[in-house]
Image (cartoon, rainbow, N blue to C red; front, side, top):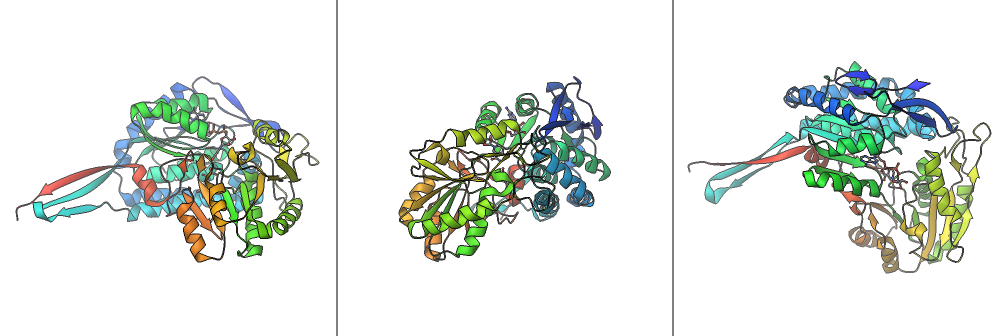
Length: 482
Ligand SMILES: NC(=O)C1=CN([C@@H]2O[C@H](COP(=O)(O)OP(=O)(O)OC[C@H]3O[C@@H](n4cnc5c(N)ncnc54)[C@H](O)[C@@H]3O)[C@@H](O)[C@H]2O)C=CC1
Ligand SMILES: O=C(O)/C=C/C=C(\O)C(=O)O
């Protein structure tokens, strides 16, 4: 049985209370490990360590901080296979995906911010008529909290930690209790890479106890969180009275607008991926597909046929397209949406059933599911399902497509398929989302601002935006004699 530990003050240690939580392999539906059920005292120990480390780390040269992050990236890369296997076992995702996407992206996050910090510059403003020069100092915030979800475990954990460390902060980080193992492996890599004790502290446990204590701790000055919208609201309620800096990357219900003039084959292949990659458990998945009426029937037939060919099963099999959903509770949540559909407004075109692959009978598998809907206000089109379930609906005009896309409470991303440059510009400007992809999906440049509008969150991650978040600006104004 794999038992992982907290990483506090450079050491791997048990939780103070000696309380543990079970860790479940979602493909097998079996407990395979234990993780610390950390409480207030563990978080507090981590804060003491971070406090002690902050003076030195924040004054360490940018070159040294950068090299340390590069050593961490190299350390993960050396153990890529082991990290990918751990991610796949913990999360249920195909091993091939963890090898190709999750772990390489975690490595890229550390490399990217190791380099970005060497190029990060502050601004100055000369005010000629008063003979003044203003310049902005950017200082690390101090001790910051990074809380990440289970869908892209190390990918999103490192997406927060890397910029926080690069900017000179000390970090208290909590991965999801559902997928904690790669964060534990990361603590071993940090030890090997010579990251000074207390600079990064990883505390494992539930959101209710461990996460809540991180958010509520008065010495933790900023919180970067990715996860569900309800949790984000709760975090905001706790943190706001203490005026903590907040970056909240929350849920999505992203539209995928398909126009008849698009590059059809590319659109079909990408739409299959944007619907079902990672079992549909990516906040950027295009879960509402709207198709121009003239190609609706053709798209419906082709998309259903392609979806039916997808292989659901053993995450280790290189031919597997969809692995298991992350947990029994999540499977039930997603499956309930299908069980409760209203047949007057919806029709299941593909999937809709639980799957019990041989050797994985107790695992949490669900067929990729396509549902045709005739009412944009139905739950399936309004609520984040976060699983392999997409809806299909036709539209007649660009104006109608825009209206359908925007009438939800979320605003994370959108994809538009068209070869009309003017239409792509009009829609990119009018769609209420933080990210718009035209003729592509999940095409990421780590320098770009990343985040949502409406109930998809506040703040932006990525590039210098992340370094801005993890630093506090201070303006200095000097008047000189002319
Ligand atoms: N990136 C995204 O957009 C994600 C969206 N979700 C959505 O949220 C729904 C619920 O999934 P959950 O696993 O419950 O996600 P969650 O939002 O509860 O979990 C994300 C992280 O927040 C922590 N957390 C939970 N409560 C907390 C609290 N009070 N204070 C501090 N940290 C806390 C969790 O331990 C985990 O590390 C999903 O069905 C999905 O719709 C979930 C994960 C990722
Ligand atoms: O940064 C990315 O490329 C992807 C981020 C995805 C999420 O934040 C998510 O699925 O929660």
